[in-house]
Image 1 (cartoon, rainbow, N blue to C red):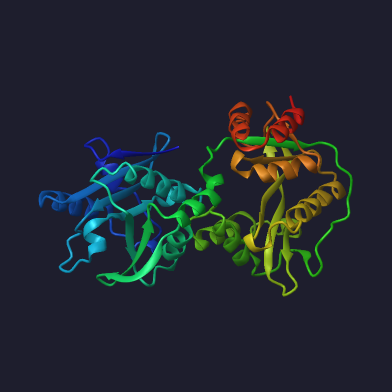
Image 2 (cartoon, one colour):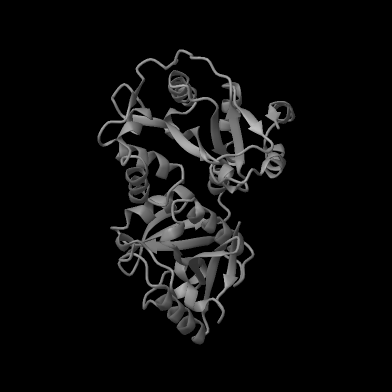
Length: 369
């Protein structure tokens, strides 16, 4: 859970010690500079609120909001009358976990309490070269309005926009509390992989790490494409014998539109199979590609005597959970693997809020000790 806390003598130097990756430093001011700006802004009778970002009890980042002037000589009515998401950074150690999106959610919740009075919009700005920030904020619902703040592009989020309410509903799954959900399949027989016409599934080929990174970034599992690619290279490309088990779905043009990995993890001192990183591009959802990729991965395990197979997932992936159940996986009440704490009871409490009564009964029936 993301919690925003005031900057105090107890945490100020820890906040100032938070770090970005080198390639991000040119686009975000250092936190100590932001705190100095906040002091000056308040000293002049204007609004600035710097906050430490905590994930549970761990300090992970820094944000600053304001309302009204941000100290420029010429400022439009938009700037003078609305809230500004002035600064946002997540420490490099905590990027790639979806915490940036969750932090924006927490900031929006705070702004909607109108700490400096009511307003219609939230605005922010970024440099033209900062394509990552542009993509993140556009995905969230910020829209460029043609204005500039100095040499930076302004993008605006309408607090009362029906379009933004629809976007928030579409992205609701990521607001569901994260609970470790463990599934296991102990009995599975080889099945034919059924694909739509023109689609195919192949093993990893050189360059696919870049396409995998784009897919995972697009669904919010990493804070940048660069970070996702770095993870793939470090985790998978160092194990040549694994490469045939990294599967990619291609469309008729040969573009990567999905992926899934037959991975090996640990359960105590023993190695166990783990279906890993199932992802399908948004434009190719509801075509049966997720089922096809899972089936292809499970066939790998059958061929190499890799049962049982474990999955680690979470309630916001409830549609995937239903898919896994249909393939023979069962929710585990106590069993686990790797270093995951099984949070079955918490997960089921969240799932009960999301799925239909019939689906929830199915989840209960397909749970095992």
